[in-house]
Image (cartoon, rainbow, N blue to C red; front, side, top):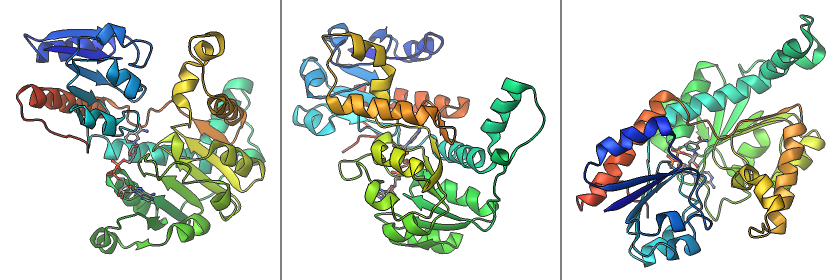
Length: 337
Ligand code: NAI
């Protein structure tokens, strides 16, 4: 059994190798994509993270592949449908960071509502303890928070919000009415949540249907001065429309742990200089717009770290090991459909 792990830090590698005595294990730096399938070509199992792109070409280039274990909840970077047609199973880590990500979403909300980063950057740059109008924030108490997606993470965001005295409204394709009753909040239509919220936070998965869930049409119905927070997936927001909404002053600030095109951004220099890897025109356009966002003082961007706490990482590793062991023992768990 050959198992290849992509993108596991050196300090963490022994954790995995000790767990699979007897298996042929290798660690490859970076991600799995069309450019480094060669290194894993005999693998029965590959273990990847969100930055890997496991598409048809990658799957076809790994003839022995039987199992893909992603060390994440989201699996939009894997062509699961195609994998299934070839009898390849895919597992994920369904629950590890529902508190972790919810806390981070709140970190972004507080940073935006109170200009904490802006003030900190000012002090560091100028060593000046005077404060200015641009540092004036607003209270969260009695404001309306709109949660899109009340799954594991959205539900924890709601509980935190209640502690702040925030009025919560939510939209989900499958509302949990029992949870709503227990926690005293209302589900509304998508349009109502988008147009009535002072702060909107996204906790829905990236699916074909959810691409550009937030777009120019609905940004134009948002309250002027709304804050938008995305810790789910970059594809949920049309970046072009977000830049427009920020420039128009409809969106007063955005907190983004995920960006559309974040994988391309990581390889930016390579994409710009290599003739072997041509990005699509849309990728370049999104990358450019991502740079526009990075320059905006009212936009906070973090590099997809909402999951990244020692507790969550430990849970991810444990579940991933259980997933791979389950596959080896012919008793697979946490399979994605
Ligand atoms: P979950 O599966 O428990 O909940 C997702 C909810 O979204 C479900 O209730 C579903 O019905 C709902 N939903 C789907 N499409 C929707 C739509 N169009 N409008 C409204 N609701 C919709 O997932 P969980 O654990 O809460 O995670 C949410 C997302 O957060 C994940 O899919 C993942 O992409 C992202 N995530 C990001 C992390 C990060 O580090 N930034 C870490 C972990 C997860």
